[in-house]
Amino acid sequence: MILYDAIMYKYPNAVPRNDFELRNDGNGSYIEKWNLRAPLPTQEELQAWWEESKSNPAYEPPDQVELLAQELSQEKLARKKLEELNQTLGNALSEIKLQLLSLQGENNV
Image (cartoon, rainbow, N blue to C red):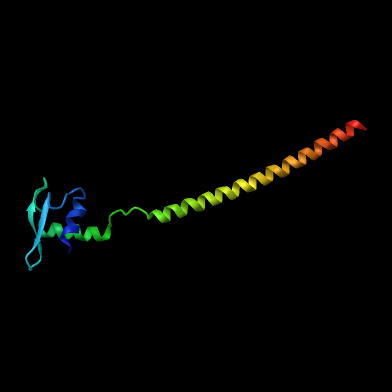
């Protein structure tokens, strides 16, 4: 068990060396000072927190490069859709123009 991780899992806002201090004299780590407004945890509680922390890892924000890559991909997709829409509208406008010219030609005859 990693004592520090167990405590930080249960008390994520705790400030090490201020709210608690750990020590290891060669026989394993233990809590030397406990300044949190909570009872000093038992070995069983610490072990349970440690087990929970392994099964429920702390939230890690996504990698910034990965986020930028996703945004770029979405922008490329949006641009492609806009280009397709622009082409469709251009074709429709060309057809309307041809129909208009055709109607104008019929009226001049």
